[in-house]
Amino acid sequence: MNLREKYGIPQNAVITIAGTVGVGKSTMTKALAEALEFRTSFEKVDANPYLDRFYDDFKKWSFHLQIYFLAERFKEQKRIFEYGGGFIQDRSIYEDTGIFAKMHMEKGTMEATDYETYTSLFDAMVMTPYFPHPDLLIYLDGSIEDILSRIQLRGRPMEQSTPVEYWYEMHERYENWINNFNACPVLRLDIKEYDLMKNPETVEPIIEKIGSFLTQTAVLRK
Image (cartoon, rainbow, N blue to C red; front, side):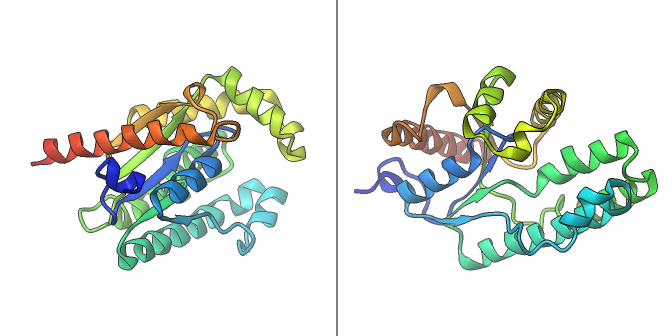
C-alpha cells in the first residue's frame, strides 16, 4: 500500500502549494508528488514574453504581465482537471491578484483602472462555481526570521541583492492574503516542523495531515 492509499487521499486530488519566497514550495511540490505518485505542475517562466520588459519598467508592463500570468494559470488549471487530477501544483492562481497585482496598484506601478479591469476579469474567470478550484491549498507558514534564513542559505544572487525590507513586506502581504482566503480549503504547515531536504522521511507525517484534513473537509461539505 502506498502513502496515498494508506492515508485515504483520492487519486484525482489536486493540491496547490502556496507561500512567500523561500518557504520551500518547489521542494514540497516534488516531495509530495513523488510520495503520492502524482504529477507536478510548475510555473513556466522561460516562455514569459513580458518578464524582462517588466523588470525594465514596472509601471509600463505590470498590467500586461499580470494578464499573461492569469491566462497561463487559467489554462494550466483547466489542463490539470481535464487530465483527471492527481497533481501537486507549485503556486496558485489566487496569489497574483491577492498579492502582486494589489501591491502594484498600491505602489503606483499599476494604474487603478488597469487594476479594476484585471480584478474584474479574474473574478469572472476564477471566482465562479464553474472554475475547477483545488481540493486543498497547502500554505507553507513561517516566521520572517526563518524565511530570511532560508533565502540566505540557498544563496540566489537576485534574492541576496534584494533589500530585506522587501521580504518583510511580502511576508506581511502573504499573511494578510491567506488570513482572508476562502476559495478552497487551506491547510497551514509550519516550515519549522519538517525539513524535506535533510530528512525526506518527514513527508509521511505531512501526508497523514493532508489525508485527515481532506476527510474532515469532505464531511463538512456533506
